Image (cartoon, rainbow, N blue to C red; front, top):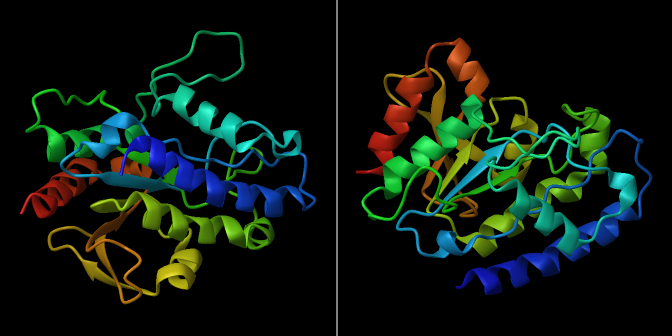
Length: 237
């Protein structure tokens, strides 16, 4: 399916989500929802990867009621962390955090056989398990429950995008929602203590679905490189 058709399919479910979400009352510090926009490169990748993080670190404001088009445009302009606008009047920034370096490296490791692919290629996708943040950090559990439809939205996104690999860089903070959505069994990956393969009887996740700590935690635990290597080895078998 082309990126245009994928985006059209996403727009339908996103509009339903926004209609429901904007019909509720939210605290002033809740960000706008994170809605994906599919890049053309994604459709031609040999290995299609979706990275799922925790929540944004500011992403507009919920009370502005931005449209689906505006939110997808914001996602595209962010350029997978290569053009981050912090609204401080400074030039957009190329993010080199552990999260983005890890995502770019794993994507490249699995797709570098294509001669025109680099770590800067927009061939992978990123979303978060929580579609918004609260005061630039994790929403309270009460806000998460109010946004249950946002967690359910991930199911529809994956069904539309059909990634070959899903990587949950969520740590264990959102396990309540993973359990509710997918009822997964966790298989520890040999040689690591921070990486699991998720197996879901719901068949809503691809066979190759990883869960690991947030990359910041991996770096603190000095397991960043070993987890990246283990994931690459398993995915390339």
